[in-house]
Every structure is written in C-alpha cells, then in structure tokens.
Image (cartoon, rainbow, N blue to C red; front, side, top):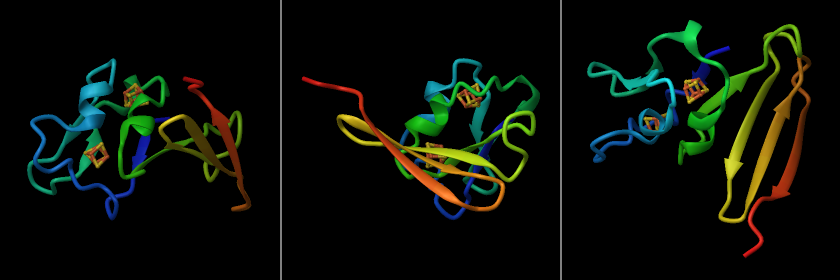
Length: 107
Ligand code: SF4
Ligand code: SF4
C-alpha cells in the first residue's frame, strides 16, 4: 500500500532543496507537487512499504495503510520518531488506537 499523505500536516519541506521523504525513498517514488506544494507517491504500485518516508517526515504527515490481507483498509500504522526511541501508533479497522514505544538507541 502506498503511503498516505496528510496534506494538512505536509509542508512540502519548504526551504529544503529536496524533501525528507524524497531524499530517503529507496525507489525514488516520492515527490512534492509543484502545484499543491504537497508530497505524493508518484508510482504507488512500486511502493514496497518500507516505511522509510513515514519515519523520515518531521511532521508526521505520512502514514502507512495496512493491506487488507493483514488489517483491512481502515487500519493504519504511524511512526513518531524520537531521538532515542520510536513510537508506533496502530489503528485497527474499528478506529481503536494503540501506542507502542521502543527504545532504538542506547548510547
Ligand atoms: S517529509 Fe513530510 S512534510 Fe516533508 S514533503 Fe514529505 S510528507 Fe511533506
Ligand atoms: S514506503 Fe518506502 S518505498 Fe514506499 S514510498 Fe515510502 S520510502 Fe518509498
């Protein structure tokens, strides 16, 4: 499933030569629209859900929709990066949300 952009949160990484999501995507799939100034995935069928763009966005504007084989279309997963941890917000098909926080750097 391609990433879903919250256009209210996406700033287009204004002021940067290349947005964080464009810069990190291993498939070069992310772009910022010249018209709207918002990010989008230009080839959704080629996205392999690595979630790099989701983690890299400093505004939490990207979420991953969980494919129906795993959680049905309304389910989603959204990471919030901390300096030494990552917090995952998981929403199921009924809108119930659970939060999981993991330390990912011990130095
Ligand atoms: S990194 Fe986030 S704020 Fe920046 S262009 Fe991508 S979605 Fe928008
Ligand atoms: S999830 Fe991975 S492959 Fe898909 S658009 Fe984001 S960075 Fe690219």
